Image (cartoon, rainbow, N blue to C red):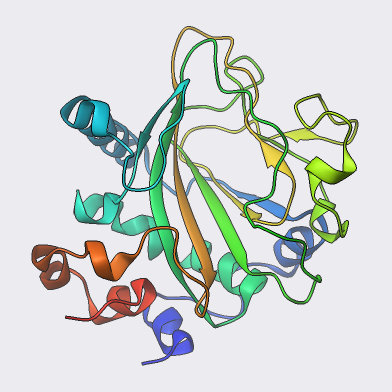
Length: 254
């Protein structure tokens, strides 16, 4: 199997994204995809994440990253089959394909919930260095499990910054400060926002009285190390559950 075969098996076609959507993703570095999750899926995935946060306690998110001011979970592929949609949905995979080409794999599948009174992040890229526009190495997606709004600290992005040739920490006097060109990703739960991982972005302050919950499905070029080593963490039960196509996207073997 190769990635083009895997994508076809998942239902990805050249026109799965419209020409306008591809143009926007190329130009702005991000693309909202609405109604990817049904309301019942949003409820199920959110409820399961809440259960896992409670069950794992102080260890929650430890496989990849823990953060003051946010609930974190990692390695979700091994923790519930309902999260499989996050790395097999054709619209999402088509967008990742558009950014990275047909040579990528899943890097990680995590959960982040910014707590009330927290959530503000510096503008950053999800890559360690600047790359040329024809050599993007990673692409991320945010799966909204709650409505994202200015009140609860929706993620901000700086359109076109993936082509700036600069890291935000080098270009900006204060990466925590509002950027004059930033846009807030305000959208309803069930939306998935694809964003080129080289696009400047960051969470904003959650001024509401509720957590702002989201899943993050991160993809990288196939030769790059994964944020979570999928092979190392793979459980036998997960291997048996996954289709050959899903195994290929994860790049795992038994």
